[in-house]
Amino acid sequence: MTQTSENVTWLTQEAYNKLKHELEYLTGPARTEIAAKIAAAREEGDLRENGGYHAAKEEQGKQELRVRQLTQLLEKAQVGEAPASADGAVAPGMVVTIAFDGDEDDTLTFLLASREYASAAIETYSPQSPLGAGVIGHKVGEDAEYELPNGRKASVTILKAEPYSG
Image (tube, rainbow, N blue to C red):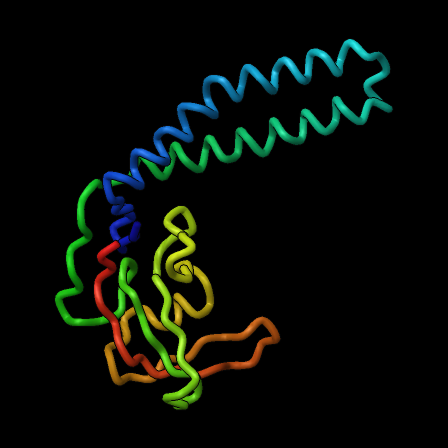
């Protein structure tokens, strides 16, 4: 999955089907299940001191947030392959290899994509993460800078950038 500047989210057919299935479950059986939990907890009495009720309501809130996220994501989804970067610059949907602080031995290879596409096969960094945002637009051989959580700046060199093939 990749996102382009036009706010289109490119998904493989497999990723689209997986997310669509999750949305259907959350808006169907999962809603029924959580409503039953809330109703059962409500029947236990005083809602102010009813831990089961409050836990079920919190779970419902998280579930509805995920429904909104998936709905927005799928509305902007295009199934297929994202267009390749015409100028060879790092873009979402690419597997990127970087070297930290110019040290060719200290490298990291990752997929630059949103978290819905994360897998155990390759580490995934969001285009909105500090590192992801820092490398976007840079070409192989260029240095890129990003901000660390402590406020300091870090520098990396782009060693390789190629479209993700799955």
